Image 1 (cartoon, rainbow, N blue to C red):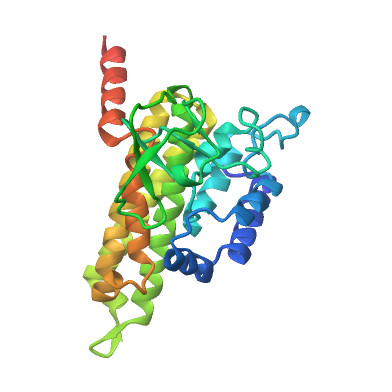
Image 2: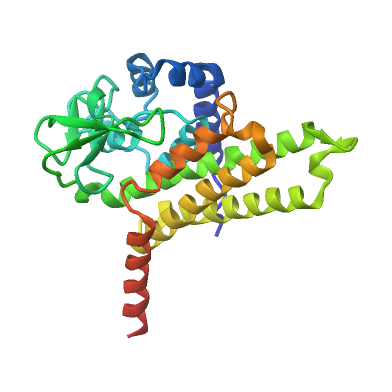
Length: 298
């Protein structure tokens, strides 16, 4: 069996990367951070026009008619570019909430557990709720993921498996990007007359980052093919670890520079922390996998 992406899938991934590089590159990311605007409505409509949200919607309903494997590749690229906003929820709402598929509506979800909702202030609808509930803003570790606490939590469990998988794909893209950032910086920064990448400790950090990211990639791609709940849980667990630990190791490679506001590394870490709490946490994934293992042992 051949588990490599097809030529069409490679072209899809390349097209999305080119689109985001031109429309949401580093300058746009920094402008979002400086302005505090986490959802650019014009960008949202462009993503909708490119089929980002309608990717899995049947062609008979105006969608692209592709599947989870293609969606994972697209979301991986969005994670790599750190595109902010409720991408997963709006994608899940395509065909359910008017305007979601086209990107003319921004849809959030109860994906953080309890009464927290991300991007509530920008949302036209919230999965798991009737209408948009009122909420009080709470401080978020990620400057581009504003959070609100609502009085009563809604139920978005019907979307949990796909939501967790697509969030894992976002984490995977971020993890792969931090590998690139670390390796590039290790080749440019010099100490004692040579690039710091020549030192064994730095090599080991970068190698561990790459291994975690590639293991997560394998798990995410496999779960996209099978759609199995246990494999989705494992993929989310591994992708969260790759994104969080990869960003932390990338900070180590950058040294003091990585902690500065001018660097992008800390933005990957902060986003990874938030995504690790979305749709399925590590504890929830571990519980699900433990139940499956116990069931198979019986």
